[in-house]
Image (tube, rainbow over the protein chains, first blue to last red):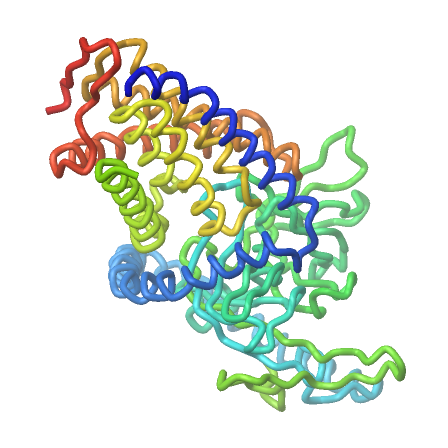
Length: 315
Length: 179
């Protein structure tokens, strides 16, 4: 028997290598609706309840850890916030005046006053994060809502992390849905190396592309060197490209780099969302444009999921 | 099919199920230095150390397919890497004839390093661009150490619970320093 084992070792090894290569080839060449993808989707569907269960079990431990962490940094943050409050109070008065001016200008442009930053008819579906990418090569999360909840490939995703508080910090763009099964969806984070988001910098009006990287850094590229960009300015989506609506906060300018050989500035972005502790997200189900008339219609969801259609409190 | 083979298949299936459950429920939620341990690879290495290259390769194939499904990745990539890992770990153990706990640590670390390097090459070829030293420093080295550290207790536990036997190689000179 041992002799047979040794004799079989190499053929079995070769067969397994060929089987793996065959799977790999079929996986690449086959359409998304093919049988191998269907088997993979079915397998992922079977695992999703386990992942949801895991997320539920882990939640109290993660919350406890977060609570301790927050307590630790609360004192330092309180001092820092006190100083910032003084500065912000002055800013608030200025902003109030600007808001009034803005309102007048919007009325002039005949913009819908209740539109908020998302297109009219946008629906929101909240989802729980049930899985995360296992390596740094990709940055994605898996959520517990899928096609039956109205989620489509390309749907933008926003989120808030525990550092959010009442300020803008902690709330912002998370990414977009890249694949959907019946009850789950995979969300490519903006920190993914393959992600590119058209963005602009508030205050300087500079425009560029916010790109992720394998190291997890977020970089805004293609910003003209002639435009002055100061640290701490807020970066939002520009709305170009048709994936993300305009004005979704992404992060702030952390540092501005310029190289002699590069015709663009390279801006390091500190995202608002802390992707390490992302637990829940909000998927934006944008209205579908009908090709014949170009009219915008709101999507409907078929499940029992609570969806909120954007109204006056659109933000 | 004999009773022994059925038991072996049952044990392999049980190990895959345990790997999936632990990976999904626990390990994927515990990140150390930004990386998580890869239990599928760790179990493949443990099986290969204990039962040899053929069992290691077969288990690696099964674990790889399940890992590709669990991680929603291109089917076949991890199975290819785990088959190679399982086969060569088994060959190395057979060549040395014996393995102690430090040997397990080194073999697991080496297997993890090579597996991640191959995975990284495949990823690099498929799309994401990354600096070599960035990816070595932030992904490959931390996970190599983490996988090697996690392999030791997993190996000890599985041997102690008699899910897998202590290494027994074809030369007949093998012993285990793990106990």
